[in-house]
Image 1 (cartoon, rainbow, N blue to C red):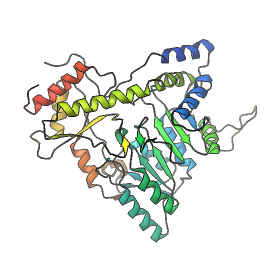
Image 2: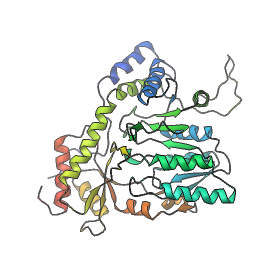
Image 3: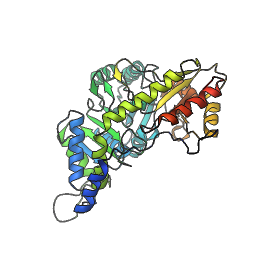
Image 4: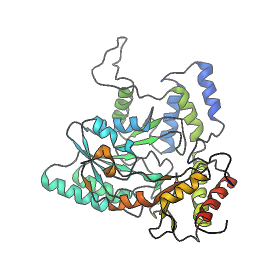
Length: 381
């Protein structure tokens, strides 16, 4: 039997209050990139992260936030930026837009994020050579925090600033503190597949109020104050609309419930597939709360069914699944870029599979996915 409706990986899940805020935007005609929803969304987002009220800038995408964040950190032509190889391409594309180049660093297996030990080795080598990188990008992958203490310790030792890419990790904790609050600048995504969504959008968070002001200025074409359209700096059309900010306000109200449900889905998969030794859930690092934005499993090397075959089996039953991110050092786009290590990330890519994880996934739909997987491995439903 095949599911009549395709079961997708991660879809938007409205909470109900979003429409009220959007209607207010329409009724008051605040339909552009200014308005009360934007101001409130930024303030409410900052409060959610336990930051001062004016710490956030609502933008059109998480990628735009990374671009502005790297610019705030001073990345420019010829600069090196260290970044994890196991990530989505949006984490590193803005480095090239600013004229810099990325050096990729392998994952560690505890969290699948950037390996702090390898990062320390690279920074030490760069220090000895007298050419420290301009910045380090740390990504919190699939809703799991990187191990921030050793990362920030070594970066502080060498005076290299960090950008936290928390696009996949709103609601994630590191030792009880929200990720995306420790670095000088951090970024979030509200793309349609994220744990909460504005249908498209992102947020930049900075600790320095002047950086917040500067990011907001750049995001609105860097237009100088006054009646004339005068510009002394390069700017961008990056501001979020007041309508989408209304959706974000409603989504923020249900974030805790979305996190709870995503974790429940991941652990339901884990428990239902526990008698299949070839499958193992992405590790849950002891140093943080993993939101399990996506439920990600590894297929054992000795499995009778490899990862690609499992994806095909699920697809034939109308279930979407995907590999984990293809590492940047394996991408044609970055051919020739330096990568320190890479074997762990390549292995995770080769064996990792992302399963349907929408917070509005029904029990019946998840049971169907589980049954399909169990049948593929010769287990009874």
